[in-house]
Image 1 (tube, rainbow, N blue to C red):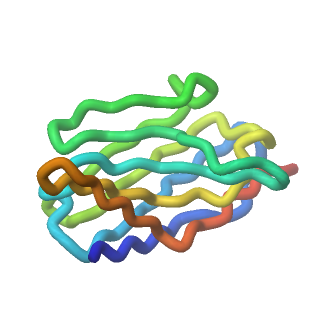
Image 2 (image 1 turned 90 degrees about the horizontal axis):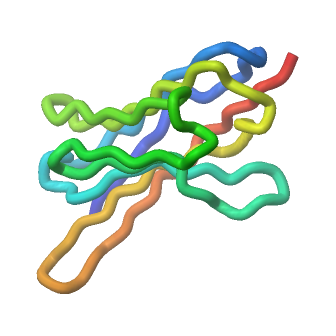
Length: 119
């Protein structure tokens, strides 16, 4: 079992920045893939960015160049730096961890943190 706790959400004006954090209950070096997802009002949950244990990253097109995902293995924390925020970025942001064991995968989610971009 992996417990994930997000923090750092809040209200920000368009063009502003926020950094989300996700604290894990285990050594994140042992987590194969971590990621951030979001769910906007009336929308399905969607991928924002992922990072592998080796540090390879992948981003949703609309967030490329504005968002940066990173992981601090020493502090077992995943981050999402968000710049140039737009109203369309308003959503609940979820942290995700995926662990592989043999041929099977286990996926874990945090409780989410609200990000609201509005003037």
